[in-house]
Image 1 (cartoon, one colour):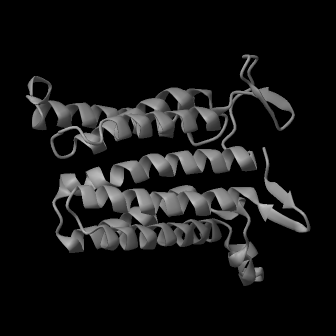
Image 2: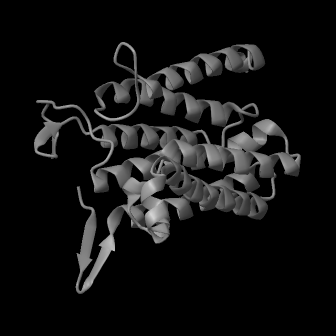
Length: 244
């Protein structure tokens, strides 16, 4: 955990720096992938930038809505750099709605567009995992495994590193198969399946997140649902892909 990086007289907020760098890498990766898919890379970069910015605003406003008495007393707190004062689900939903609407207006083909977004999705998961590791958020359950990390006074599963490793695997698989001939949508489905499988396994060791009855995490239910959908799509849309 390294929430603040001291460089001489300057104190830099590490999670914020990671998010800024990650956002830049996401935009760059998506732009290059878009050009490979014969799409307008610059326009897609701008759409992703707007979606990311909207996600940040949506996450802050979402948190403000559930904590409105505090923000009513101090409206300037909306500009706080505190990463705890964000509601990630609201941010993700806002980014998806704004980004999806902007993409819909372009009338680009669906699968090539999703393929262009694939490396950005993996980078987004990697960025979020590293930011959580720096801030101490998204921590795991107490554990006595050799690779446990000391966080909040206990040895815990490094669930942030589990998520980061999953994202790295997705990026490596995407990069290795980048130049290979694949049907439209295969890159997106492959990256999404790896991320969903990693979430399904890794979040079983998480100590944070929304719990459903039976101590099942909502993120695991969503991940399993995504995996089932991907298998269904793959078997119906690409039935002869393995024979190609």
